[in-house]
Image: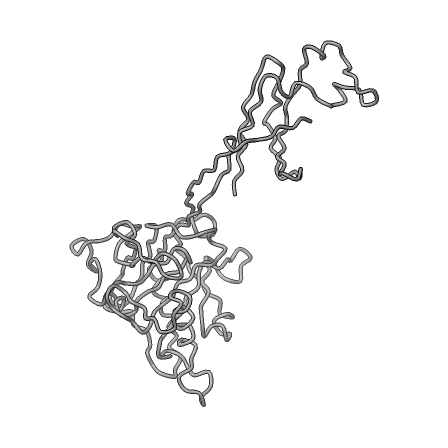
Length: 335
C-alpha cells in the first residue's frame, strides 16, 4: 500500500440533469386509474383520495398520486362539529396549501389574473420521483360533460419564472407535453377567460387546478353546497380516469466529484504485498525486483485528513506499473 497527497487541481465537480419516467413500471403515461374503497370510506377520504395504477387489493398496487379539494369558505364538505360552523375539511385543505405555497395565511390563489376561492390539488406520491418534476412533460387529459381538455405547463414559453415559498410556479394552459395550443389549434384555446387552468409546482410535485376555468371548458363543476359532502375528490378522479391519459416525467440533478489520481513513473513501483517482500525480514524476495520492480494497481482508496477511509474505487482490471510507466486514474463519485 502506498499513499499520495492530492491537491486542489486533482478535484473537479460536475452536475448533470437526468429525466426519468414517473409512474410505476416505467410507464411514461398512466392510462389506468383505481381507488381504494376502504380509504375513501375512512375519515381520510374526507381530505384526499389515493389513486393507484391497478386494483388497490393487488400486491403490485402502488399509490401514484392523491387528489384533494380545497375551498376558502369551507364549501363542499360537512362541518367537523355542527356547533362550530365554518370549520370543514375543505377549508382546512385550503389553509394548509396556502401556508405551504405562499407562507401567508392571508394570501390568495391567483390563476392568470383571476383570484379563486377554491382549487383541486393533484399531489404526486413522494416515492414516484427523487427530486422534482420535469418541465414541459405534463400531459394531463380531463373529460367532462362538455368534452375533453388537454393540459400542460407553460414553462417552455415564459420569459421569467415566478417563485413562491414552494419554489418555481408555472401556469397550466391547454396543450400537450410542453407544446402550448394557440387559440386556433384547439377548441379549448390557449387559456380560458377565467384565468389559467391552474398552477404547476415542479419543486413540490404538485398540480393545482382552477375549477372555474375547467368548468368553463368541459363543464366539470365542483359541488359548492355548504355543510354538505360534495364528493369533489371523486369528481376530479372521474374526469382523469375517463380521459385515461396522464403523462409526466421526473427530473434529478446528479452531482459528480471527479478525482484524478496521477501516478508518476517513480511512484507506486514497490509494494508490501507478501508476494513481493518478506513479512518477517522486510527484504525483497527476488533480487530482480530491487532495481526493476513490477507491481499491479487494483484499488484506489480515498482517505480524509484524519486518515479515515471514506471511499474505495476498484479498477476493472489490474494495471501493470513499473519505472517505465505512468498512469492517470479517474475516480467518479456520484451523490
